[in-house]
Image (cartoon, rainbow, N blue to C red; front, side, top):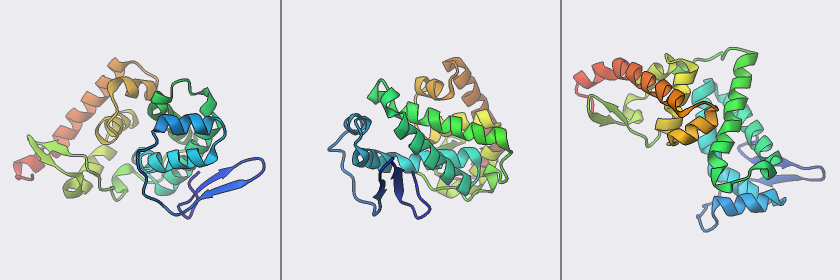
Length: 211
């Protein structure tokens, strides 16, 4: 789990494990190898796996639920549930979509309990390397952060999640369908309708020559 001090904390029946200081992680060990080791009870392997995925999952949840504390709490739950159910993952190569399916379920469980107290458009957006295209020109979120966040906040939950998964997280349509548990055609419909709305929202920026 992600602790309040930014640490990874795993609870077992006998011990508490901490993964504190962030270290430089090389891909000498592939995720699939770590998953197999973790499924056999290797907590340190899972700690390393979490350190590779925690930021992406947190940013996904933040854009979906619209509240930093909620996103942090949900991320803890996601990684704990993933650890508890890792043996059920049949294909280690599908870890990403499988993990995000858990995150999706946790987010929508929160939605069912209550409406988010903070809208997505009220969050100071995270700077990412993903580009946004406006009027045929590539514009980075760092330059359009407030406008893009506001436009995302006016999408429906389903549309916003489709944009986040495709544009910000880089999943394929088949992976998105697995995460969202719906047909690929539904995923594409949500994404394309969302992009049309975003295009209309961001079009005035293109006319002002933002690039």
